[in-house]
Amino acid sequence: MKSSKSFILFWNYEDLHAIDPLLILTSPLEILTFEFNPKDPNFVVAGTINGQIMLWDLKNVQVGQVTKKKGKKSEKNEIR
Image (cartoon, rainbow, N blue to C red; front, side):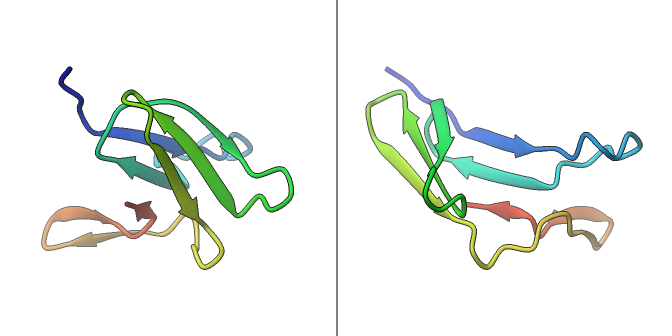
């Protein structure tokens, strides 16, 4: 079974003019499901196609910061 990189994108639906996501979580494997920890929403857990569990700690993340670097878009809000 071949798997590919997956992303979880977080958008701000209150800002109707925003075209960039607030936060991008990346995984080397396809993500089938994800959920915030109900006791601490700074933790996001995801289940991948091969049964592995991915965990992201968002405590020190500043969302919504996108910068440009040498003509290319460099996303500071991408977490791997």
